Amino acid sequence: MHNTDRPAVAASTDAVIRVAGLAKEYRVYDKPEGLLASVRGLFRRRSRVVEALRGVDLAVGQGEFVALLGPNGAGKTTLLKLLSGIITPTRGAATVLGHVPWERADAFRRRFALVMGQRNQLWWDLPAAESFRLHQEIYRIEPARFERTRDELVDMLGVRDLMLRPVRDLSLGERMKLELVAALLHEPEVLFLDEPTIGLDVVAQHTIHQFLRHVQKERRTTVVLTTHYMKDVAALCERVVVITRGSILYDGSLQRIVDRFTTHKIVTLDFDEAPDRDRVERFGFPCEVRGPRVVLRIDRGRIADALPTLLRSEGVRDVSVEDVPLEEIVAELFRSGGRAAGLQESAS
Amino acid sequence: MTAPAPGSPMWAGLRTWWTMLSICLEERLVYRGDFALGTLMRFLPIVTQVFLWTAVFAASSRTDIAGYSRNDIVAYYLLTMLTRAFSSMPGLAGGIARSVRDGSVKKYLVQPVDYVSFLLAARIAHKLVYYVVAALPFAGVFWVCRGYFPPPPDAATIAACVVSLLLSFLLGFFMEATLGMLGFWFMEVSSIVFGYMLVQYLLSGHMFPIDMLAGIPSGLPGTSVADVVHWLPFEYTAYFPAAVWLGKIRGMELARALAIEAGWVLVMVVACRIAWRRGTRRYSAFGG
Image 1 (cartoon, chains in turn blue, purple):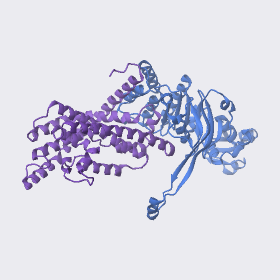
Image 2 (tube, one colour):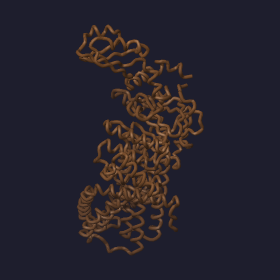
Image 3 (cartoon, helix red, strand yellow):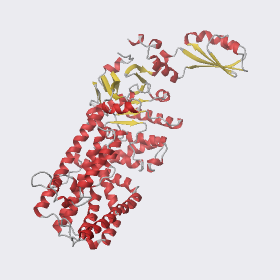
Image 4 (cartoon, helix red, strand yellow):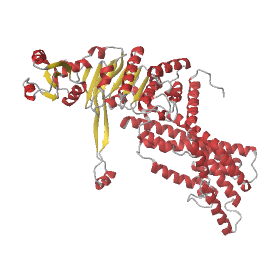
């Protein structure tokens, strides 16, 4: 049903996460507008069924770092909630580390962690070190191991001093780092991250990227994350799963998306002085003139022919050729629903 | 009973619970200022009660009502203050319902920790901090009012009173926790809690001693309203421990009442467990 580049993983026996035909339907009640309608609603409520996830198949191998992408409401978070056992599916099956997640066995819950962007697992009024101590107990971590892991994690994120301050006094970025420490103390084999970098500044994002990459590499942790930031994906994930309207649209490497969905390259020309618009338009490409700088969108197939001509034109000081920004590519992928750029034909 | 061996699952469970308790204690101590003021405020309604009953006794020219002298009544109200310090659970039901509404209950589905045990640890911590802070104002008020109290009862009665107080804590906790679990079915439980508080206020003995209902027929042959109320859980959260201290309930009657109280604790523990299990199942199926 969906497109995959990775039949090898799906077929392999050592998959840590296996999902087959997983579907989740919600019944939502429509709240009609107006007082009269609201009163009527007290007696008879109109409901409809929303399919958050419609029969998803997925296999993730040990040590993989997978990004779930999709527009809001596509079903990414629903999938994470199913995999972490918060909700039960309407149809289909899944196992994580050999357990059915929604049975919520303690043996399973000690082996994974879920970090939801703005949700607090840390105690608000106490220093994070106290929450860590509680985690040590509920996850049954040996004292020596606990201290070693904790020290390693807080040093990597540079939050050793912060863990002794009440959480409410910390910034969002500092809190997020400590949330990650809390989630990783028991060295989970599987880590689910729901928008881990939301609302963070660039420096904090970068630190978290480095941290996650290191942890995943050292421990061979299997990580599945949802995000809206392409920076996260580019920095961390070799594998991308795109979900729209509850179905998997694409499953494969990030590079494949870029290759398949970029029909253009962005060519920037810097002139000695602002050129005439007419002259620029004569190149025959869609263009944008910003003072002495001209930005052209050129078909990938025509780049090789076009560049020499462009370079020879008078007054050109500098040229750069770049890919279309990842955000734009993914936005186009969401919009087109995968019909664009030959995704279908390559599926088989 | 033998102590669980170190390394056994039960030992680990106890350690976890102890850590929860100590962390909850620390958290509670952040708010100790609130408590000191709140405690004194709680004694204010008593003053009105004392004036009211003084007026009632003056008007009726009787020396006792339903076996309570004026002094007994004042002592009774003071003692129910103490009972309520064990059995009342401010914010428990609302807090559970809120955690369902805002989704913070998810944490307890994902982590290997039991929500009810955790709430119990938090509540014990809450109470312990409260007793430490409230001990002085309580002692002060009781000392000022010592003239209203009969001489202290014998050791067996005191022991029964302590047991009834501890059971009243558990009963109050599990009743309110079960109410809070209704949050899995209803968006808002505050009106349900309000209704419960109203019934509780009338039937727990918080408003007047249950003995005063002894003369009112319940409609069932040969039974008064008081007889019916004795079989309900409410009076065990206020009236019962106070009445035991004042020597109103003795012997077999006392043993039977303690058994009823313990029985209700058991019922509510089970009800709370069922509500949690069904509630989380529903939450998993519909919400999340």
